[in-house]
Amino acid sequence: MDLTLEQRKQETNRITLWGVVVNLVLAVIKIVGGIVGQSQALLADGIHSLSDLASDGMVLIAVKHAGEDADEDHPYGHARYETLATVALGFLLIAVAGGIAYDAMLRLEHPDNIVEPALFTLIIAAISVISKEVLYHMTRAVAKKLRSSLLEANAWHHRSDAISSIIVFFGITGTYFGYPLLDAIAAMMVAIMIGKIGLDLSRQSMQELVDTALDPEMVESIKLTILSIDDVRQLHLLRSRRMGHNALVDVHIQVSPKLSVSEGHHIAESVEKALKDKFEEVNDVTVHIDPEDDETAASCKHLPLRSELLLTLSQEWSKHDVLKNIDDISLHYLDGQISVEACLPLKYLQTLDDAKALKQDFNKACKKITCIGESQLHFC
Picture (tube, helix red, strand yellow):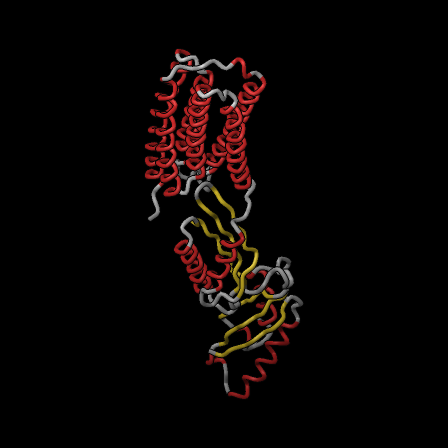
C-alpha cells in the first residue's frame, strides 16, 4: 500500500527521533565514561556517536523539505532533497571511516601509550553495541517499508557505531589479556568496511542526481509490460530515472495512425496505469503517442498546420462545382507527407458513375499541393 507524503514524513521522523534520543544518551555516557575510565577508545566512540546525532539532524531537515508537495518551482516535488542528504551522509560515513583508520594507525605506532581502562567501560561499550544494533534493525525496517535510501544510509551509520563499539569492547578486553594492538587492527578492517558502505551510498545517490536509468532488468520488464497493452505496436525512446523513493518513466509508443485522438489517449492512460500497478516505485509516467516510428520515418515538422493546409485545399476545391461542398476532412501526418481523407455528402452524388469521376478530380486537385501524399474521397 502506497503511503502519503505526510505518512512517510511521520514514519521517518518517528524512527529518527528515536535515534536522536539513543545517540544523545550514548554520546554522553561514552564521553564521560571515556574520560573518567581513562579509555581513549571509548572517548573516540563517544565522538562517533555525536556524528550520528549530526546525521539524524540531516535526516530530519531533509525529510522536512522532501515531504513538501510539488509547487510551481518544483513541479516534480522535492524528493531530491532526500537524495542530496543521502550523498552527504555517505560522505560523512567515509569521513568517520577515515577517522577510525587514522586513530588505529596512531595506536599501532604508539602501543606504549595505551592506558588500561576501568572495567565499567566494558559495560558501556556492551550497552552501546546492543542499543545501536537494535536501532539499526528498526531504522532499516522502516527504510525498506518506505524505500528510502536516506534512512538506509542512516541505518548503516547506526551499525557503524555498533561496530565501532564492538571494536572498543574487544580493544578494552585485549588490554587486559596483554594484546593492546588487537583493537587497532580490528579498527582498521572495520574502517575499510564503513568506508565502502559510505562510498556505495554516495555513488548510488550521485547516479540518481545525474538521472541514471533504472536497472536494466527493470527497464526490460517495463518494455514487456508496455508491449502487452492492446494496440501498442512498438515503443522507442524509453527513458527512466529515479527521484528519491520514486521512479519516473517517459516513453514513445506507436499505434495505428487511423485511431482517433480519444482512443490514442485511452491507450496512453492504459500504459500509465499498467506501469503504476505493476511497479510500486513508478509514480510518474509520460506517454507520447506516435502514428509511426519517428526515429526512422521522415520528419513532418516542416509541414503546414491544419488551418494553413485547409485554406489551400479549399481554394483548389472551390474551382469544382461539387468538390467545393466537402465538409469532413481528416489529415494524417506520416513519413514527411500529409495524407488527406475527405467526405462528400451523398446528396451531391447524382449517379454511381459520378463517384469515379469525382474521385479522380479530387486526387488531381490534391496532387497540386506538393506536401500531400495519398488522398481519398469518401461519400457519406
